[in-house]
Image (cartoon, rainbow, N blue to C red; front, side, top):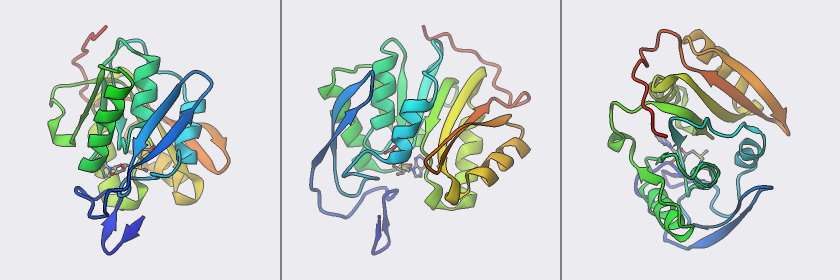
Length: 213
Ligand SMILES: C[S@@+](CC[C@H](N)C(=O)[O-])C[C@H]1O[C@@H](n2cnc3c(N)ncnc32)[C@H](O)[C@@H]1O
């Protein structure tokens, strides 16, 4: 989606609001999620997101959970359902997306979801598990800066799962992550998408373990 300088990662999308619903059906989770124009994949569950939700391991039982680049919230709300006792942070730069996540969490009765802008996340937080269908289209420099920042907030025993299309550079991203000191392996490859498993960098300075359960 990129019309007249507008992208799904615009802070305040100009596209006129036209609400829709995505029916999310997974073996263990069913949710009806409100979506809207100006938000990534608003008409259907993105296939990469489905692969992440179906094939990545469930979150660790300890530590806050992050959905990096949450859109209307399919990942955050699935994780919040799978781990009702853990805090789930749904972070995005798109304010329309954040409003949808808040409405979707309220409708699903999920009080453990906080949807907010990147700068609103407490600086001293450490995550047990990070999931992301990252915004590859923001460009390499912005993507790399974003991943370096959030992955350095993993607990020492934390893990991140990223879904990236092979033709959008999943393999070179995996190499770059490993080069940055984040042990990275390809967990699975499904229909042109890779799930990358990324561990905390041994010297990332993530020494403050927060026991949130
Ligand atoms: C590929 S979409 C995935 C959306 C949603 N997780 C899904 O699966 O439908 C990536 C998301 O990252 C967001 N994004 C772009 N730049 C960002 C940044 N610097 N920090 C956080 N999120 C960002 C975009 O607005 C977009 O919603």
